[in-house]
Length: 239
Image (tube, rainbow, N blue to C red; front, top):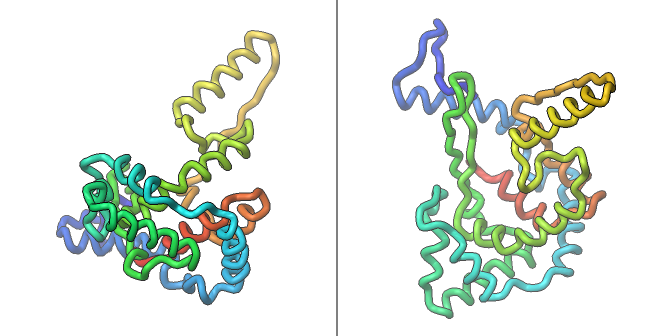
């Protein structure tokens, strides 16, 4: 979205509230907020839920030790969601409270449902350039703890399915991809080979992905469906 909102005459809007309102309207339109029905009204969602439920039966329950280890990973200062809570603070709770949090996260996986208030997200628009902002979604503490605990399973699956042409993988970066690409071209030149290169840049690529596509492709390639289901449930939440 544009970093600087403009009025009908093309002038910059400097009033803070009007600027915020303009950004909200832009992203609501881009994300098709008004035209996207909730998951329960989409015909593909029940099949997705059944598959995720079957996968959840294969998961080992989350333990209180895993919860405690996850809480300690978070830095002392982080961007916080609407609950204004850093999960690290919970590491000081007594054992009984840690057990209650563990019970809650296991119940979420068993029921495939987040408490309604946890679905509310804060979207921070970070400055990227004069032409665009970068939206960063700040989720609430329970979701962050759960995703941290289940991260190794998703990471293992991702590492097992990575292909030579994948660039959106752990340890990769735009600079690394560009250097490797240029190195291959220079080696081809040194060896006397002819070559051509086609570069395709998609604007806001991840914003163009549709949840149904993620479910259909994910189910074909063995993606951990419980993790995907609970993540997409949050994706449909209020922002």
